[in-house]
Length: 156
Image (cartoon, rainbow, N blue to C red; front, side):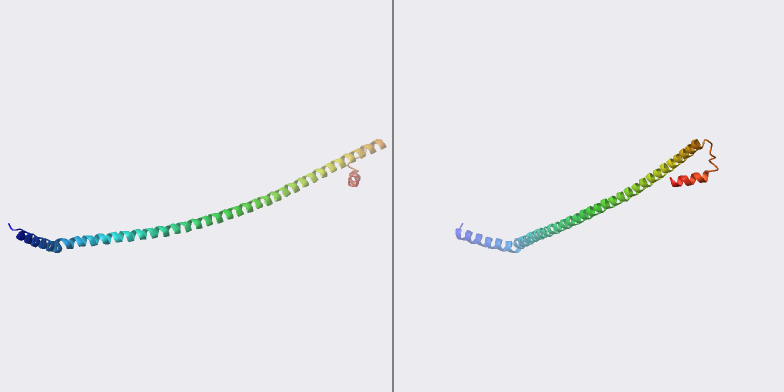
């Protein structure tokens, strides 16, 4: 065995092996690596897009939250305004009802005073008749002198 022939044989075999790898093995490996590189790039791009969309969604969410807070404060302000109006209406209704009750009570008092005056007039007229009867010592006919008694009542 000659070392030169062995070395030359191994060199030829190595060159054949390299040529075989470059023709048969290397292209599928390169395709796989290219596809892997592309999928990694796509994944990174999708991650960046997702990150960007997340930021946009965060901003939209913050804007919507701000809008919702503004609407809520507007609704609360309107509710407070309406509550104040209802209180004012209730106060006005209560005042009107109080005035009506007061007017009714005054009218009732006036009626009672009028009845009391009429009662007193009747009693005074009866006393006057009784006094006149005692003075004259005779009986006065109330039916006959009803007109006279009515005029006396009016004067009292």
